[in-house]
Structure formats: C-alpha cells, structure tokens
Length: 183
Length: 164
Image 1: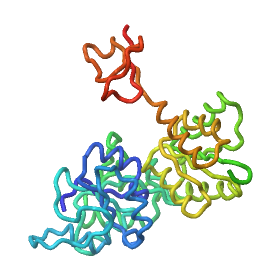
Image 2 (image 1 turned 30 degrees about the vertical axis):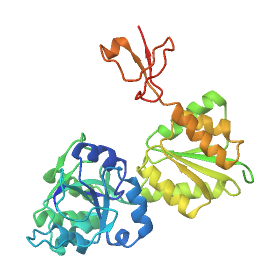
Image 3 (image 1 turned 45 degrees about the vertical axis):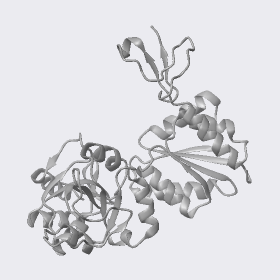
Image 4 (image 1 turned 135 degrees about the vertical axis):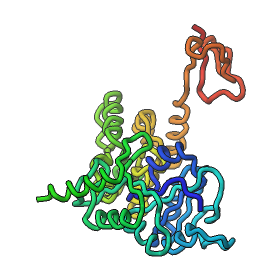
C-alpha cells in the first residue's frame, strides 16, 4: 500500500484531515486502522460519511493493515472493510493512514509493519499532560511513542499542514519535560 | 412540531458557535431556543458528553436540530453520534448566519416543510458579487450585470456582475 501520511489523531477522520491534509496531499484514500471500528458498521458508516466525496474511506483491523502494508510481492490483497477500493497500491499520492493512539501504531509494528514516519497530530486525553496545544498524552501514549522511536519510526508532531513541525528529538524532549513538571 | 417547539444547538469550532448565536441575536433579539457549544478545549469525548447532556436537559418533548459548521468535522461527528442516541430530528452541516436566522424565522412551520425551506433559503443566500475592477477582463460565465441583464447558464449560483 502506498502511503502519503501515517498520522496519530484520536479524532480520526475530521476537519484537519479532510480539509487540511487531504486538500494538500490529495490522497487516494483515507485508511483508519482500528480493530473496534473495523467491526462496527455504524462507526464505519459515520466516519466514511466524513471523508471527502472523492476520497474513499477504508477501515482495517491491525492484522489486515499489517498484511496490506508489509512489502510483499505476492498479488494477494488483504481483506478490506468499508467502502474503500481495497488495499492495493492505488494511484495518486497514496493513502492517509490514521491511528487513534500511538499504541495502535505499535500494535501494527508488533504485527509486522513498522511505520517509517509518524505524524503525531492530535491526542486529547482526559487527564493527559500537555505537550503541545494539540497533544495531551497519558503515560501509555508516551511509552508507545518512545518504543516506536526505538524501533526506528521517525516521529514528528504537527497538527495541520502549515503548522510548525516538531521533530522527534524536540517532541520526545517535550514529553520528558511535561513528565518532569507533573506534580 | 412537538411539545415546546424546536430547539437548535449550534456546534462549531472555536468561537464560531457563540459568534453565530450572538450575531443572530443582534438581528432578532434573544432566542432562548437556540443554544451553542464549542469544541475548543474539549476532548472529543467531552464534546460528545456535553452535547448529549444539553440535548437531554433541554430537548425533551421538542424537535431538536443540531447545526454543525463543517461536514465531516469533529463537531459534525459529535452531532451525528448524539443523534444516534437522542431524539434529534436532524443534523445540519454548513451552519452560517443565514441558517440560524432562518431557523428562528421559520420555526413555526411543521418539520418537513421547515427543513426544506430552511435549506432552500440558506443555499440561496450564498453567492458572489464580482466587480469589474477585481475581475480584470474576465467575463464570468453566466454572471449577471447590475442593470438586470440576467444570468447566463453556467454561472455560479447567485453571482451577479456589477459594472464599475
């Protein structure tokens, strides 16, 4: 699967993705990787309705996503759900792939596909520590991000295309600083 | 219409929801059946919980309409999730000042004609006025001159050309 952007955003398909990133990247489709949503027809329909008309939405379990994204010369395609066009390569800029938490990206790594570069674009955890105005993280999020970085994923924080890009070192430093400032 | 009539809840990004209600009330006066909610500072779960609570507290026995700003946005998704579990009559997208004004002015209509008229009037209110000075030599297809020469096929709906 050709991918233009891997993104962590707990709102999944929403304005920043639909208007901001999709207008900029012109993705072939928007892929949500989430076991719960992949099994919930109502949530799939709801999120698919939020995608731009010209950009199909697709919903994969972590296992399906790992099979679709692993470099594999075989022509077999992973199973797909939703109204997408399947997990084949596709044209254009590739897909925008969304995870609601970093833990899902880590599950994907455990399943055999390590995301090469991950945009951390929105985490609004109740009781989370503020790292940037759009990242409020729990210890589990920080642990998953650090583990992803350890496995080779290049992390960066950026909410919108014209927003400031915070590279991995600064992001991880901010995470550490936010942790130190906790009472 | 049921019970105490219609309730509108504007749900929008940033200051937009409050701004729309304030602007509408500056034209029509206070409207206790129009409420607003912003997503600013709220987690998606908190926005949803706040909206569900508002609809539960004020929507009983009423026709509830949720007016969101951006189709596909987090506010619209919160509206649709609320509508799934609450007695919401309709979720509307693309909320603007006209929509809110017309909501108040048309609220006496029964639900079906109300929604049709509301959307028709709101859509009709969107347009452009293109001036010679800004458009250069470009002749917008179908634009209408200010002297009422009429629109040509293919014009953006509502566009009018005004000669300067």
